Amino acid sequence: MAAGLARAAAAPADFPGLGPFTPDSLTLIVVPDRAALDSLVRGRAPAWGAGLALPSAHTIVLRADAGDVQRTLRHELAHLALHARVRVRLPLWFDEGYAAWAAGEWERLGGLELNLAVARGAVPDFDGLDGALRGSPATAAAGYALAMSAVLELARRTPQGRLDPLLGRLAAGEDFDAAVLATTGLTVPRFEDVWRRSVRTRYTVVTWLVAGGAWALLAVGLIVLGGWRRRADRGRRAALDEGWVVAEEPPETPEPLDRPPTSL
Image 1 (tube, rainbow, N blue to C red):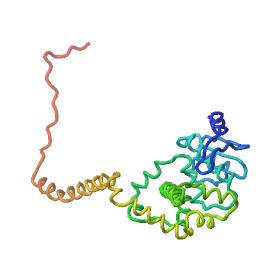
Image 2: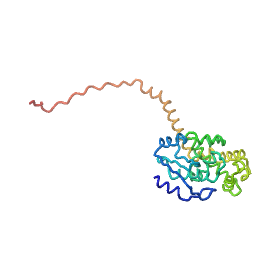
Image 3: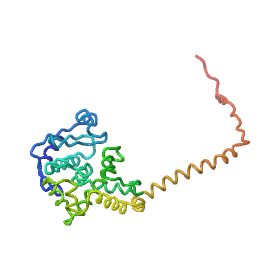
Image 4: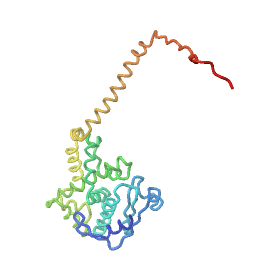
């Protein structure tokens, strides 16, 4: 597995807004499970983490037992490609959202359709989004999807409809906030408001119901109705049991033999 992943990592690959990227040097470590990853990186990866990129050390660590390892490699390579071109400090939500986009993790956006909190309008701000990305598996799953949607919204807000202008300014050393303003015409706080509003518009209770939420409500309703019916029938069943006397069955007697047994 490690040899195959190393060959994949060494092959040139295109990344959104960055173009072809091949790492000059790369240490790729494949570990068998969570315990091995945790002992190696000393708790720097969350418990649910499938891999970890250390751009400054040109190192990627992957878990062999966690999901699609090839796609996890692509996700971590995107972190290396981004930090190889961009030296300025990037928000965590942008870093992770870009890697999710570059790895083609489109099913994450589909998962937002089934997220009831998002459907009800509970979209975090960027600080809350950074916290969600390092939270529980459930909050992190929504966090990665929301981060990816924010990066896609940034690309859509540029005149070209791509991320190239923003990444070009960042690669030239421009501050993140200034680069966002120059390419989208929006300050980061203003963009945050626009993005949160777009998420609320796209993912509503209606989309949640269409995506499968209606079946979840139906299942819960049937469980609740079943419990209510059992409680309502409890007295009736008890009344039906009154006055019933079950006679004890007589002990069984052995059937007579056709002829007396012989003794030896």
